Length: 258
Image (cartoon, rainbow, N blue to C red; front, side, top):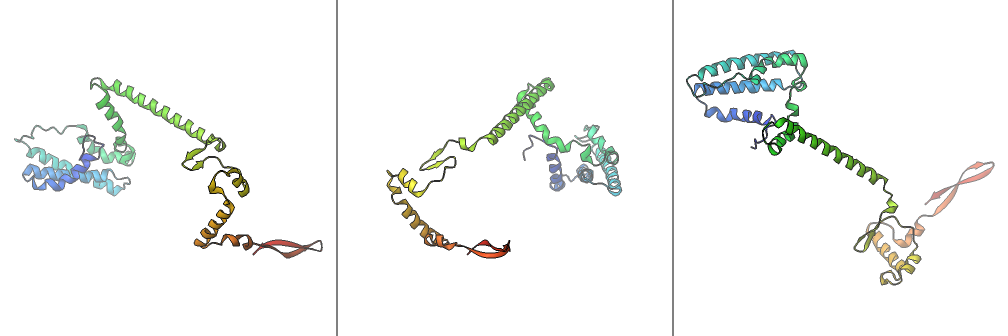
């Protein structure tokens, strides 16, 4: 697992897996208490990050905080005279859990005041810190590079917007034909009769008797797809007229196709 960048969820995922992996390793008194504390912590996190809370869920959260405090006090006591005795648990995040569900009652769900939903946005700043600073007095350096990134992004967006606008204004009749082998892709051409086409292409043997060749092709192509042969197309649709009603004592006729 890549832990070079921690967006706030990787350690949480690792903690969930560790509970099932480490129970056969942490078998002494302190280890068992640590696993109990980890389980209580995961229960607390599950309740804390819920997007909808009720009086019941908040009460359960308060009870889990008390359980966690009790287990951790036992664990700290069990660590005396061990290499872990000097571990200090006096840090803000460890203390903040005591007020977590009171904050939810006052401010709503944790997503309203927590930083976890936006931690993924910190990656660019972290990359700037690692790649573009000398690790000394980093704040002004990060601000400078972040400003440059914002300016570059703005310029790029403006260029893209202008390109899109120009593309919409482009007249299709002004498009130069693109030659693709024996196919010309360009603006729509004017209608051209078969006879005029044959006259224009007199030097190309492929267009000799083009009308007849085209008719033979269509006569073969259409039946292959269940369509009418070319020889029947002209006679297939014949307009007829029928009397519909009278206007000023005269019959009127509507066109009907058969």
